[in-house]
Image 1 (cartoon, helix red, strand yellow):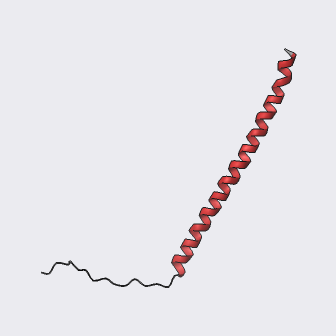
Image 2: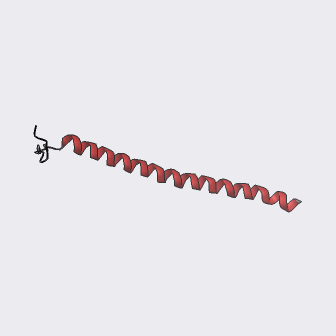
Image 3: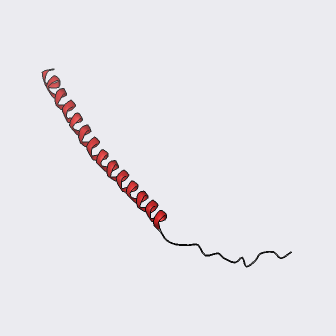
Length: 66
């Protein structure tokens, strides 16, 4: 009985340490992923807003003649 009660706090400590490590790793992964996505979206929006291009009108080749 004594051995089982001595091992239980060690098992709980092991689980707690691994839970904290997993939370840190996944938090960093998703934080960096979110930061990268926001950066790409902002760069795309700025490129769209500040681009100096004009759409050239196109002639419809198969427009019906009435």
